[in-house]
Picture 1 (cartoon, rainbow, N blue to C red):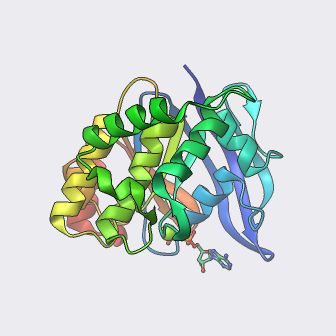
Picture 2 (cartoon, rainbow, N blue to C red):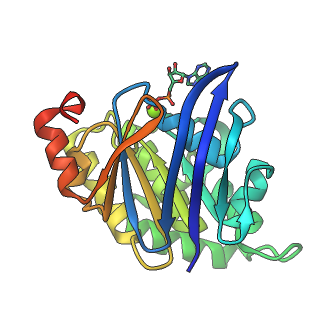
Length: 245
Ligand code: ADP
Ligand code: MG
């Protein structure tokens, strides 16, 4: 079992300190909800964990198992087992979702020089799409191009299902979804939940937590975790808002 260990993490953007000493441990098999008002630093933490060069770590460490992540680029972190789904997924014209996913699969799940045979991958893809209740035709279309909000978020969850990371960071996977799309995305995440994966579910609103019960909830305000607790903390937020914390 691996643990993502974040210890006293301080992060700045253009000399401005955004994260002010975050410490957090996420084990494989656990679901952590990270909640907080807009601008509290949730996406900054997500991007920093993935190794976005814009975010400068001025103090503290990030580690997955025995491997220190601080100096690794995003590709190396992905190989180590970190996955980030974006708040705003990009469209990639002219690259089909299935080719995109097969390339990601080959890069992350296969030894060098041994790509997965196309037919074998098609089976894997079909199985995962079925598990997530997705229309198989979506895989033939360009990545996210013309996808609805719900389809974009589900294509992120499909990526997650194919790549099977050790730690998945889902940044506002629930934002902008209507109730049906939200339920579908939540169902997808629940279907992937298991002992092999640790999930950091970043959300502003507690509504997705009606469908996904987290093991731990953390409240981020002003770049610091101000409270941690169990699932009940999310319900409390729903009643009192972040001001009540
Ligand atoms: P959240 O995801 O919780 O809404 P963010 O991490 O996006 O918060 O933002 C935290 C703070 O960092 C905000 O004040 C925001 O303006 C600032 N910030 C985030 N990304 C950038 C960036 N790329 N350049 C400049 N400021 C940024
Ligand atoms: Mg954000």
